[in-house]
Image: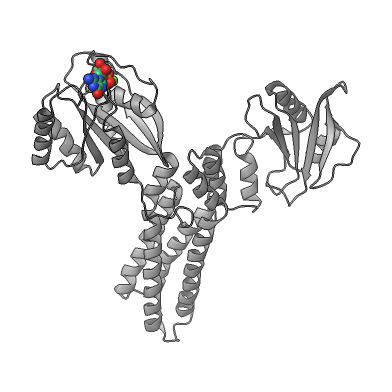
Length: 459
Ligand SMILES: Nc1nc2c(ncn2[C@@H]2O[C@H](COP(=O)(O)OP(=O)(O)OP(=O)(O)O)[C@@H](O)[C@H]2O)c(=O)[nH]1
Ligand SMILES: [Mg+2]
């Protein structure tokens, strides 16, 4: 267990009303007593007024000090917090004095890591802390807050305990084979396995939705040059993010923008128009556009009547379909061309089994709301109760659930094949282990390190 005392600025480094410098470790109070002059004794769970003194005993700032005595603190260690005025410079100076008096600068996430190592919170809760800080919508904040309050932990621990119990029964029949209750046991094992397999599969199914809500939906706008891809990005973003000109090949690199529609976050990428080109820079851009397929959840494939539909378009569309990607074909510039031309497009699409089509005019703001509604319909699960139902948002959790599920399925096969019960128990042990890792049981130091590195400094 770490013994050094750490400190960091826990608030954002901008000018603000107040800033908080947090100190955690056994020397916290000593450090405070060295640098603060106060009339009142600093006692646990009380806020005390004081003055921070520099080396020459000059007053640097008037502050409030709070002290949380171990183990009743966020980290489980002694914590002191200095509430100072929120100027960047004064906050830095006070941190500097704290460091000069014996604290070490905390690494990103180190406070939360200590909280985990000291048993103050399990790993899934610690992960929820960072999710809550990074939440970008009301819904994702609510989900993170539910996770922080333990709804993942509770479910996982409950499922894990049932498996542990099952394993215990199985061990008895391995250790005392003279008791002939293997047949009965196998039936029991089977029904518990079925229940767990169903529960875990259901949880895994919530992950895509969870990821969309937490990290956003990756949307790629692709299409030929000049169809209005960048104009659409700007329209959705409500400002001129990307350069728009009437010169085909304007966009060379990928332009990205985060856009909120209701509770959904869209990470929209506008790309270079797809065409055969000799221009080397544009060529690289076109390759990147096609590569976007690999990381996209939704493709907006844009057309404009300036370009006729070609075999190549349907090739790309069938590539999208074969990959099982969600897509909407968007035909732009309805203000500029006759309706009959759009009807021809629609017919061609229909013939090729492409039914998700939206006609728009960016210039006249037509069809944009309908396009947004289509996206919402595709990605918002209307009957999902985010407030109360458990939803997985963390890739690590999903991967562990999958591994646990695989092992449960393997043990079920072995049960059905009437394999010896000790073979079954190997898979069951694995399934139990992977579930436990979600809440931080049996995790390696490497895993913990990776998780907390993603935190911000001061948390
Ligand atoms: N009439 C009309 N013109 C539009 C509309 N949307 C975009 N344009 C024009 O079409 C031209 C090309 O628009 P961009 O948004 O740059 O097209 P792009 O697909 O990003 O083009 P590249 O970056 O070259 O691939 C510009 O002159 C836009 O003003 C529309 O709805 N109606
Ligand atoms: Mg463009």
